[in-house]
Length: 151
Image (cartoon, rainbow, N blue to C red; front, side, top):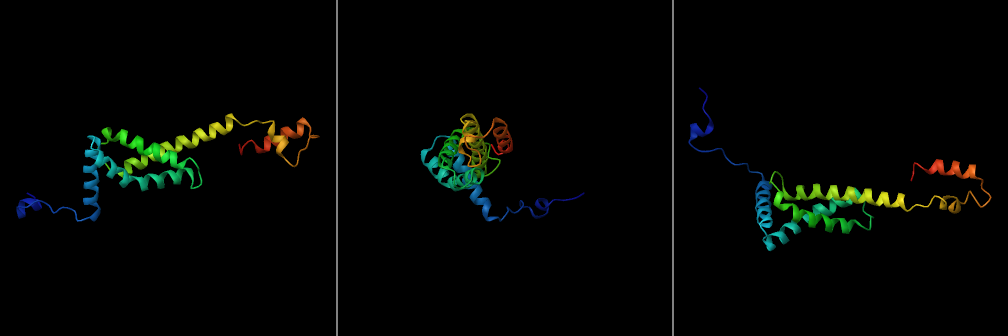
């Protein structure tokens, strides 16, 4: 019969000595308090996850996007609202990062849809230095066909 370390020594296994474990346990406890409505815990938790959220948003949207700050704020709000469903399977920053990526992708899709919705194809011929007012319909059609994949 095989004996476990606990049976031989009479003590339980030694806990992991990883420095990140204590930080993660503290963050999980903070998330539980925040989910219960503790405003101080919510503030501390938001300060903890804000850099990760900002980095995630900027990775998806790009550093020069003017709406990145808005997406960060939307993410932090969605994160606080989703805390009630947070199971604690990961660090709260990982949970917030996943929300940030999803909202960033949604913002990018909406921006693309707006560009396509409000694009005036007749402006294509007017803005090109290659095609003046004397361009034929056939030439404009070829021009538009070449640049359609970029749009």
